[in-house]
Length: 344
Image (cartoon, rainbow, N blue to C red; front, side, top):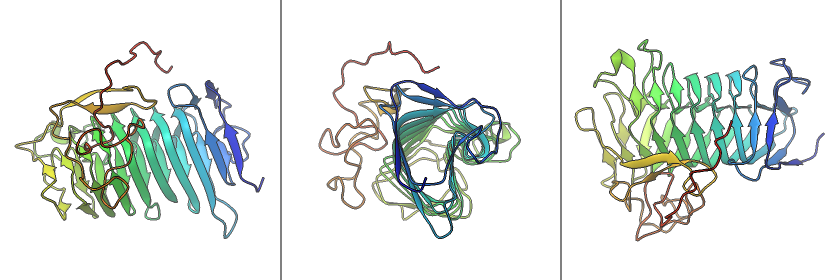
């Protein structure tokens, strides 16, 4: 239809398993969305949308000539999608996509295993885990795909080329992001570098990019595990922890509040294991000794350059005198239910 529709999901698994890729009439494969739509789930830990790896899960747009559609997806896990562009989601031009509290897990693509975006993209309080692509293991944006990434965790994503976590081909802003344990050049053919591949103007604040891996040349110390300047500008808005800038990543407008390592002296962010920690999406919670703790912006949350008002789990910031760097705020949580069943 031409109206704004809503789909409200219950706590369950929804399978997209009708065979037939690259079909655009919703007869098989992915869900083709051509008008504004809101998909709302009860939580990524209890609601799951599962593809069959033969096609992506969502194909958003294109809308009619001269039109823009708005799509929102929240509170769900999207897993096991596959496609040349966008394993979980292909976001086309003239589509404004907002993603909140979503887990992208086990998707695969040539570009952007989680999301490939040609339109506007806003991702908040979400996680990309164990996705795999040729480039852009989690996110890939085109020259038109302006992006805002907030309270997002990138973990264990892989790329055979560059950008094991993300490739940004258009302007992007990152705030309170954590990217760790992502692997570039996963096929050892020396074709890629960096968790973050910067091909346009990317501004980063209050974020951790550290302990990622570049397997080029057998993982030599000469490599660039955390970021690579692929023709773009990587600018700091302050309060970042970049574990290893390598040899081809330049952090412009570096601030005194930034912590940056190099191949000889990388910085360990001292993060706890990847887990839910009371939320609906997994995070890396900092340890009490982490150099990320209370090193975020002292500005009031919500103001320019400040930390986000909550972390990826919804925990208010700050929990102490100042907020923490990264997607998760160290809090006083003393009990974690480790017996929740794993997603299938």
